[in-house]
Image (cartoon, rainbow, N blue to C red; front, side, top):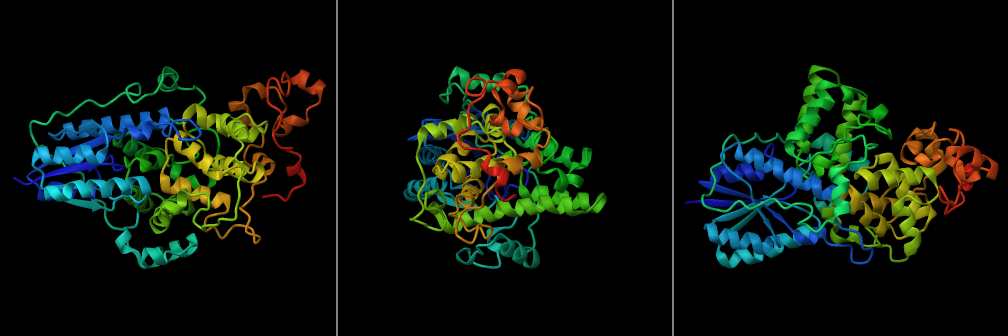
Length: 490
């Protein structure tokens, strides 16, 4: 009897899942399993906050539950365990008499360490371990260069791939799975059993009414979102024009959370876009969504090339001369949205309340942390890792490398400094009327639109008139925002 243990990781789907399809092709029986590693939910070693917030954890729990339901509808089940993956998987593989363990291939340090540990435990048991590359639009083996020769500049990477490489077809969704019998499926843990307190659980059970994005984990919701964004609403046709929005659900695709957890395959997105272009319209917006998927690929290949350097303060450039401040009090003001800079605070409070922040917001708050506050960029990256539902280690840490000036970003200034955002200019450009700021900072609701982004300039009389006392109802600014009034515009 040929039995394969299939370890689901960041590939929580049945569509376009090569590893799972291959297991079904060669095995008489397959045992799908997901392992919750308690270390995911531990506190940050220095800064204290959860490495994975309740928002991320809940999305993961929903995704696993949806996968289990999909497998059950096909005559199988999803085995769920809590523990160290290498220990749990090797013991279960031995118990069920597995000939092999299959899984998706990851590229970042913690995940590859788990692969090595599992391989080491399986070897004396004479159990094969096979990994499948499934996380990118372009397959790593199809690249027209070795990983060591990966272009440092995204445009060169994109041009070579678009000219020379064909995207592989997506794999079909299995219709039936023959399960290894007599294995206890186990219970999916709850937020409470994973160590979250009542306040964390309340964030999920009583979501903030101001949040516009209905994030729910799982392949079922992911495919429905894809269908809605393309076929039901045609929103993709204007994506390039609306993608820098700040308020509402429809200004961007919001696919990132499902892509990050593997509930949605990038090749499935590509396939549907191409079908949409054929049946309805092909324009700059439909291409731009594919362009964004290419950025996602680029960051994953960068992580594969540079390994653990993406997580270190010196970054991809290995710049040991760059120094960053480590003022924890100032960092807390940034994390809590209490900097006294409305555009920064609104974005941070949205992320704290919902687990989401727009791409435009992320660029601004990151630039502010590094260039205006001079703080350690790895703290900011770790905080994003904790809070963002769509956290992906490659994209998150790759982007922060760029922001900090330790990445391989050709857009940095010639003096080697990171790309700098004029926060006031950005606020006036993308939130001209202050609607977004007032949405998340209700204490500024009565401040006139043309003054809300420079609220710290209000006189005592104006503060009384608009019902906001600086330093009491809203914090005094940690930097002087008037410096942006005369700074070069970006």
